[in-house]
Image 1 (cartoon, rainbow, N blue to C red):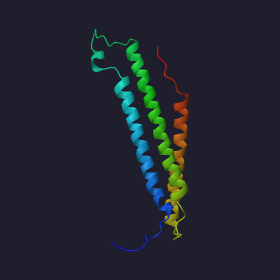
Image 2: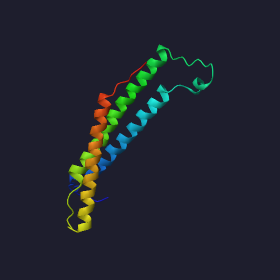
Image 3: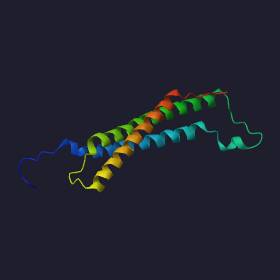
Length: 137
């Protein structure tokens, strides 16, 4: 083990890692939210059999509405993390390359555009999520 003080680290070195984990957590929240809506707001398999009583009374509708509400909350948090990951990467991780080679500059510009597009898609999806309502009946 080396002795002496630890070398100073630049806090900006952690930004690509933060962007990756923000996107990973965001995607995981989107999947869990979708899974929750599918698992708890979908009628069971017995409902597709003739003369089956699916129990579409108030208890089923209440459970389905609660599942969709929880899914919307998870989707909102997932989109927040996806947008934050794209913003972190775009703002702190993608700098013009020191080499100045055309292919390196093209890569950075393309990555910035892709992250900007992801940020725009997240904003549009959040707007749709905000304006959507569950209609029953």
